[in-house]
Length: 58
Image 1 (cartoon, rainbow, N blue to C red):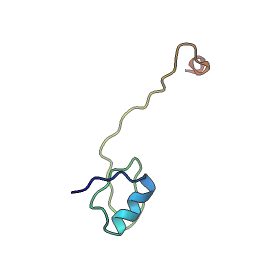
Image 2 (cartoon, rainbow, N blue to C red):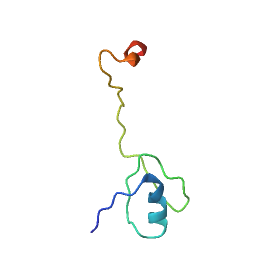
Image 3 (cartoon, rainbow, N blue to C red):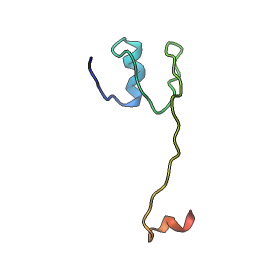
Image 4 (tube, helix red, strand yellow):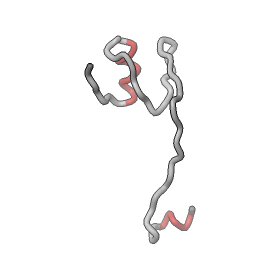
């Protein structure tokens, strides 16, 4: 077993060329030869200091 960390763009290429058996990606891969399923979803938070200019907008 070998663990690699390719960029999301390379997942599709590795899977189609049988260079990887599975991949974890942030986005669903849109390729007729690849089956992908959403496993998990999590909220995203913006974190800023109390004095940050974006604090006024949230």
